[in-house]
Length: 451
Image (cartoon, rainbow, N blue to C red; front, side):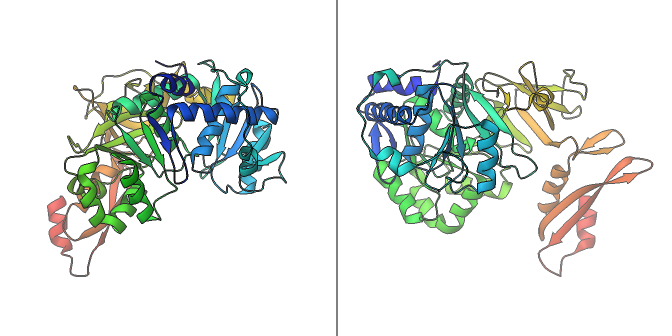
């Protein structure tokens, strides 16, 4: 196991020096070229006085330069703090001030916030490589702080060590069964954990990543696949739906080229699963369960086996167990659900400047979730929703999602929603709302069927 992602790139630059490591729409580098460019970028950062322990806010450019800045920070012992492309000023101000960052690097003008360097200008000059600026980080040092989007409150800075990054990368590498010939295209934003970690996985593996900025240029997407002989794809369910909608015919023609497709970041609905299985009958189709805090901790190939409410098997470095509300480990089953808990090297160090929140979330290296589920005798993990969403009927835990899945399986039902209602006798009872596809829907027949 490597001590850092940078160490893996360094080792591959010696043993796989002529192998293609990374490409975007403008540039491509072998492992030896990539490592040399990282050293050159580290010199550029040292010229603006970036040193060990400094925090550097970097706007995502969704290209190789962004990764060069990431690894240059690793080389200098600085902490990489990414923000999304064209992030709103208020968000950048909050992150910049909380981390007391040394500077901001990006294309958007953030000079009103603090010390700012335009990416193009900073990397335009070629610097002679100064080996004194080169080094490999300690595995326990904080590598980066990934901030949540803040849609449900104040953004949280999730601190990740080099050790955690390597463990997450290996979870992905082994989970997708990467091989030495893997060439994976990533249209996902690299400012967020999913796309960035897929890059890390390929660098640990010694394979190649192809970076593009989304899929709105669908011709460019397929052109990059052809140019670099791409055989793997990393997408979110949202991007998957868009791809199927705008390029179904082309996807059929490219179907046999893909060894695997991996999906994550959100719930994968059954309709998209089925469409992908039809479009890619011989492709491994992976669904990942996880979070920024706990990495990609569970995975399964739903083209191989697919079970309702199942999130798959624990990843290489992840350990799952089930607890009661008091965090006592229990023997779980479909009839005895509990709360999922996760541990492993891929866990975050904690929330930046939030010791109390960290203590609430991580206890002795374990993250206790509010996901209600169980682990079966084969090791597969099942999730039935969040504990505060589950309906408690006479002490029996009922998943609203499970009811909704059954409800929409009936012909003529377009959508459904299940909510709990208070009941004096039963505690709670489920109430189901359905949206029908037309006015001629036979409600009487439907009610007799679901009862």
